[in-house]
Image 1 (cartoon, rainbow, N blue to C red):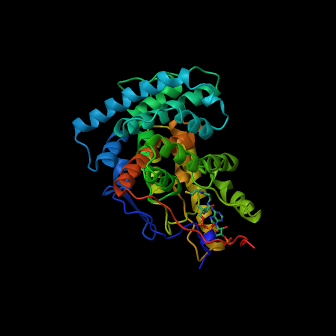
Image 2 (image 1 turned 180 degrees about the vertical axis):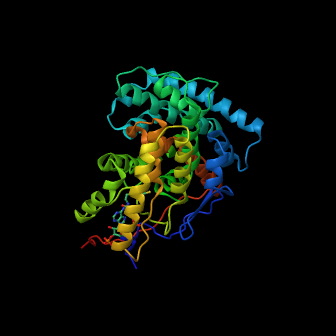
Image 3 (image 1 turned 60 degrees about the vertical axis):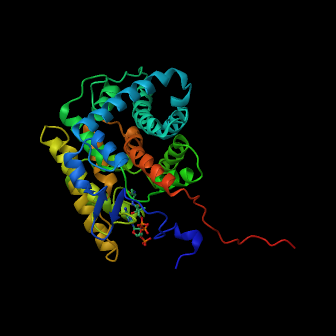
Amino acid sequence: MPTPQASGLDGIIVAQTALSDVDGEHGKLTVRGYSVEDLVERATFEVVCGLMWNGAWPSDQERDAIAAALADARAYAFDMLPSIGSALDSSDSMEALRTAVGHLRAGEFVEDRVRLTAAMAVFAAAWARKRQGLPPVPPQAGLSHAADILQMLSGNTPDPARMRGLDAYLCCVVDHGMNASTFTARVVASTGSDLVSAVVAAIGALKGPLHGGAPGPVLDMLDAIGQPDRARSWLEQELAAGRRIMGMGHRIYRVRDPRAAALESATARLERTGAAADRLAIARAIERDAERLLAERHPERALRANVEFYTAVLLDAVGIPRTLFSPMFASSRVVGWCAHVAEQRAVGRLIRPASTYVGAIPG
Ligand code: COA
């Protein structure tokens, strides 16, 4: 039995939620009654917003209303850029995002969740452009959220296959049980604070390398290995040096992370259009070899590919720079954070755990 300090709250139930369920034994992720595979195949980001926020798969009319509200909010966030000062100057994309989003004024909840969702994408794209010494590209009202992210990054009309690839990613990572950033958002919400504050705090939690930071290193690994037949020897060297294989293993899943499979399929669909062929072949070879090597070393513990593994492959294929992988994660997960804040508000009870005092006693 771990001490309370060391446990990390493993297995402690802190909320009832109708938003998502992670079945780590069987490798199943259910989001509002839909499997993650179903969402990745059939939904769009706008559909997922409707599903998460309103509880049911939106009608075409509802979906179009969400798309229009997001487009307006992207324009609003773009207009804010001159007034957010040096917020986007940081070389760390998540630090920039956290600071920039903190400039939003808290207002009415339903409007705030749309503004926050739009702002995340606009500020992330503007940060990436700024790092390249380029001016920000204004959003285009007629584009979907995923298409507009690509458009704001490159200034070009996005290729439909890449747009679909990014949409698949945004649908895949929208919610995942009581992860650290979601819990953070709920703790802030439980104090009666506003949604902007809850989301800024959640970005802070997601920024940590144990939560949202692995896909960049996964891509570095793919680059370092270079070709499939070099995978095994490279991985053996890493393990012999006591380093972990990025994108492998998970705290909850005892089988392959279902999001890895969903993102692998989305990347394969993209590959059929001519993009991403090399990376996918290398990634699959590395995954196979890493799985075998980790099984030899840890026969007691299944260490299989997690979501970050194929996130790296898919986002790279879509044309997202690796410095933007974590902000893209935030651009999707913000939808989940907002839905959890609404749930937490309905509970209406302050989250206030206890601790064991081990300090000095007054003499
Ligand atoms: N590569 C090599 N060994 C690994 C490993 C990996 N990716 N993941 C776990 N292990 C090993 C640990 O070293 C440990 O070995 P030990 O008992 O000899 O010390 C054993 O497996 C159990 O590891 P533990 O850290 O207790 O597992 P966890 O379930 O708490 O950790 C992660 C989960 C995700 C933190 C861990 O698998 C990891 O660091 N993965 C790489 C980073 C990553 O992909 N993060 C994104 C997660 S979505």
